[in-house]
Length: 265
Image (tube, rainbow, N blue to C red; front, side, top):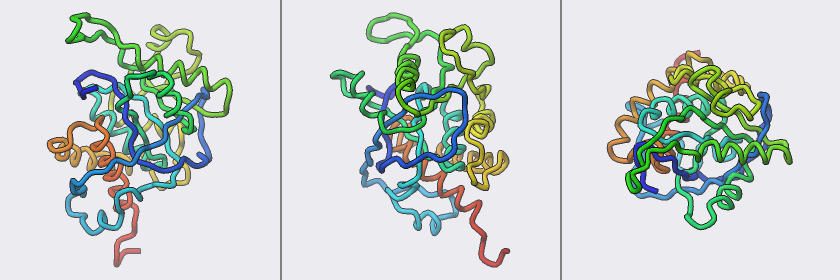
């Protein structure tokens, strides 16, 4: 599916086996999974401004390749780009590199989604996109049900394993109306990157990382500045390659901010 402004699609980024997640927190448990497929490209990897040496030390395909990771089910819309950058920055900083799915084969998509998500131990589902969209081909203006459908798969699968899922929303109490049968408390981010950072820390804590809200905000600020540059050549963050670049950049920026500089204690 083309990366339309308000289409929810699916693509897996990065490769590598998922490992034991360690410590996670939350009220809801759910199924999560996706084997990341390593994307190949001849395009030169972007580096944070002024940090070419540090960026060169982390090669493609090696960033957090053995780290536990989470699947993020997010509404792909232009108004969510900054918010999603906040999620990416926060997850990288707490040692949980995110994965997304952006394109699914047309044949038997339910089985494809299930198979892709099986290995994942944790899923994050953002459930704020509740308005109606105009479908260009049919002319219908309808709500999109892909997000709650995939959350339903996670909720159902959670009954049979110990995997976890967490739900996020922009507004307090709205999920009680839009999805009243789901008995979980969503984590509220208020539609801001800053809110996303706090929500991720609420769910996972720092996990032994030096990450603080202030530090993650610095990572996000630099990441989002770089993202606006690479978006011009690689498309938006919900395309697989651009998403991988953003995860990579967040990793490099975080390392730069937390690695002791030469000559400093």
